[in-house]
Amino acid sequence: APALEVLRLLCDVPCAGDTRLTAVIAGELALEEKVRAAAALAGRVEISFRLPGLDEDELRPYVEKRLSSAGSSRKIFEDAAWGSIGFYAGGNPRRINTLCDGALLLGATEKAALVTPDIVRRAAAEMERS
Image 1 (tube, rainbow, N blue to C red):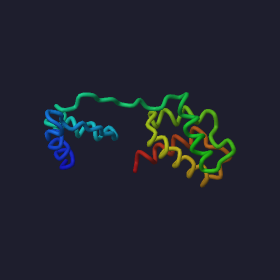
Image 2: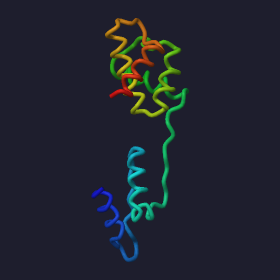
Image 3: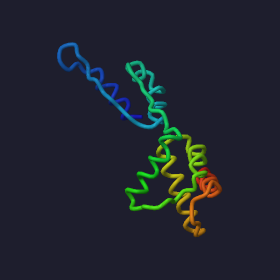
């Protein structure tokens, strides 16, 4: 990746005396894999940290906050659906968002009163197909 090569070159430029540029980069797991694959850059990484995914105690408040921000004030997911969301999304916020979007759309097309674990399962299957 050309951008990673530019970053490696910038890390070689002396700034003040013998001090080198310090860069903080953040991204998804794919970025971490690309940095590791670029051996010259990977050798310059001094600290690496991976945020853990959301656990079950964090998942429901996270989704409910997003629903509230979108204007929802009622219960939308059955209590049992939360475990399915956690299972299929693996705690990854982006996957949680995508899965919940798909489950909401599927539930709406079926005129479901609440999103059920089965609706979440089918939304997850659809998400894997696309």
